[in-house]
Image (cartoon, rainbow, N blue to C red):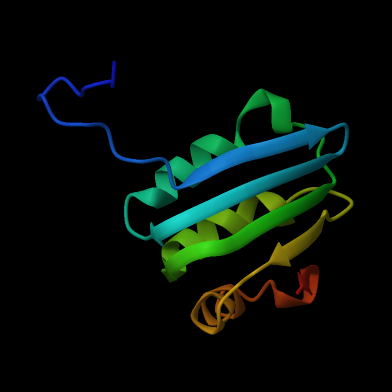
Length: 114
């Protein structure tokens, strides 16, 4: 049976999910319009205890149709505040998503994979 919100509507689809965690390496996938309130969803996901200590991130952005600057910052902030800095691989980013990531000023930390 599908879950239902208290107001009787279907819960919003998760735009970020943990695909795998293997020691210090984690893969996350984002999808759809990653805008507005999705920033809170991103921050909550990145605080999950299973992701503590991750030093190499793979972000699959191939299914993202839109990424606003607020969500790009929410995605990059926790990944860039570790010491030593984490390695972040970006997969499948469209030109628009690439531009949103560029606006965060973290592009020098990112590795763009095909």
